[in-house]
Image (cartoon, rainbow, N blue to C red; front, side, top):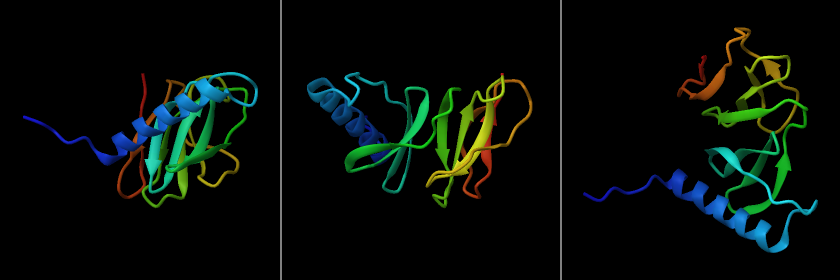
Length: 134
């Protein structure tokens, strides 16, 4: 039985392939190839992790814009259903915890204080952040 792939999965794969091809042929501004991980998509926006920070780019391509620049790692982004809030996991104050920030950019706000490695796994339709701990 043949299954159709979800459109979001196809777009994310296309984005990764286009970016990998561009990096291989032209290189990044600093002359390094990057790793593009943990993509999240909402409408025309993709958020992903690279170089330990969160970046955003339009699904049609273009120049990616850095959303975070903290020395800690940021991973597992999830975009709220209304497209306004970005939830993610970060190591800002020791253990990995859950943070949110406006998708357009801004200061992150810590949302969990468990000390058990909070990993964002998505958002519910009402905007509740889903996370898992170890």
